[in-house]
Length: 243
Image (cartoon, rainbow, N blue to C red; front, side, top):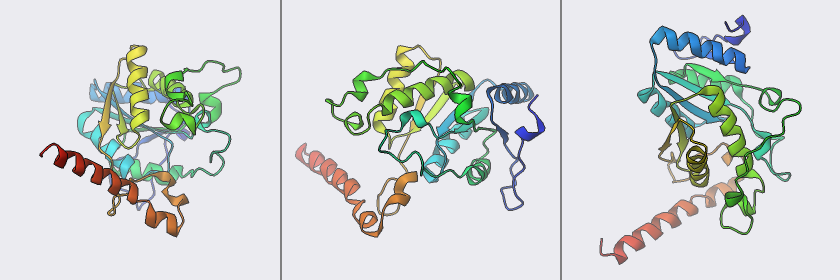
């Protein structure tokens, strides 16, 4: 069974819900999953993969998983393989204790929080090539984030094999990432159903993101223009079609 260290009690200020299992290795996860599945006669596992620094968008994924699943698992892992050399791997927020509190408040059963050595052990050498999406000549994130989708596809393949979910939850905000995961699932016949949850936004329309904290005052004031422009485009399209 998972070692005593695999469970972490929440603070007295946390939700009254039971504390989730906090597991850090594949072996601990498998044992916790086996115990909880047997105790509940569970047949469905809803999985929410995250890099932590959780916000209301992540919460919406966990809530959707809770509503539809016997067991809810979330992962918290900052995946170095999806960061380009010029990106923020070293400064990306790491707030595991706060993330556990958030996940506990919506009834998450297991939090899988591995370190890099667990996910990419010595001599690791197998990656999932998503050249169609990582091609810098194609429109999308591939031109500005070389290797991003290769890293996403690799870590998600590993997580799907470890967690063994029946359903996996992603936010619509990351549209290309959702397309990559759909292609990955189809191409490798992975027995999991992808569920895409609508984007959660700030009151002014800015999509919630862990990286919004990087915006200075001027950038934050300008950021909602993206969503406003998209909405204006949709409205123009509808009006042009006589809707």
